[in-house]
Length: 437
Ligand code: GLY
Ligand code: MN
Ligand code: MN
Image 1 (cartoon, protein in one colour):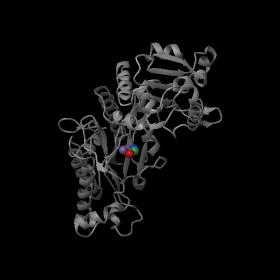
Image 2 (cartoon, helix red, strand yellow; image 1 turned 90 degrees about the horizontal axis):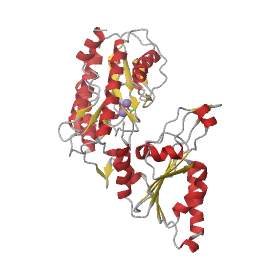
Image 3 (cartoon, rainbow, N blue to C red; image 1 turned 120 degrees about the vertical axis):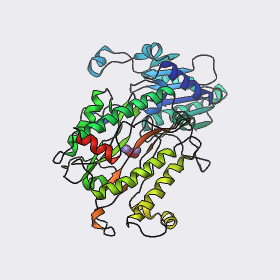
Image 4 (cartoon, rainbow, N blue to C red; image 1 turned 30 degrees about the vertical axis):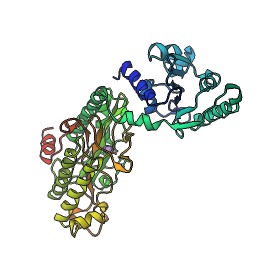
């Protein structure tokens, strides 16, 4: 769990990146209706959680830089015995102060009256527009009024600055505590993949493997999957974000599972592709080993001081060469790469940042140049080869094979650390695990 001390440090880091006397305003994620009287399970906004640890909706965080006191202010739902009996416990403003360390806290109903006072004399507002239309328009009105009143206060808001710029730079570098949680999320998720491998057999439905995976998450106390679990048998493995998960698994096919849990708001993101009957066919093994070689080479490229794109580049070379060696591509390697011939079979990038969001925040380029990797960054490495069942240009024996291998990698001062290494990934290891069930 992230400690109050760390939340406090994050707020101070952010404020140290803001000019004195500027204000940052951030609202909690709104609740969303799923259907009549039913809400989607509530998930706090990642930026809001990062700075507060506060999990309730209808809350607003205000940070004011450069003043001695009253830097961290919260608005939240008031305590209410009746509402808490129906909807669950609330911290209330007192809890926000005592438990979450707010310098002061107010009932959310009072924001209308209090926020204008907090805006007085502030020239710069750090804010992320576009996440919550209601709050956008509320804040815009308050700022309009503030400008209207400038005559009496002597100054007015001059500038909205995108809060994401400084905040997401902080989120990109994971602290030791964050690294520990992410390793645990990856370990639970790896165990879930092993469970799916052990419970797989011809005739099992994709949703049944999904249930095995999510059972393991829930039993470990991981609040939910970090994203929709993908279980794609056979040609469904060629659909990158397949979520129907309703087909019966067939003897002789592969099954691709892309699944990771969310633990204390941090995501894991792992993919394994294994044979439904426990034994890869020769063709499946050939394609698998190309993807695995690409993946291992890309993991090695996640070393500090390398460029972000180095891992992608090596996957493109190895996959292009591999596909040419088996006759699926034809031509000179550099030309095949330049003309992106591989992209019929490998149509996504090798990975993405990973953190509280599965596709986590942080720029991949700085001033148009690929970013240099630093210890504390976490990314996925997930090359794949997907041969459409309808691709008539490819020999029949390869068609319908879809393979992705995905791990979660921590950049360190030394060798890259594979957080998800508990999930077996050579064909040998996977066959051995499936034979031992
Ligand atoms: N599970 C989504 C992804 O791999 O990016
Ligand atoms: Mn994934
Ligand atoms: Mn991923």
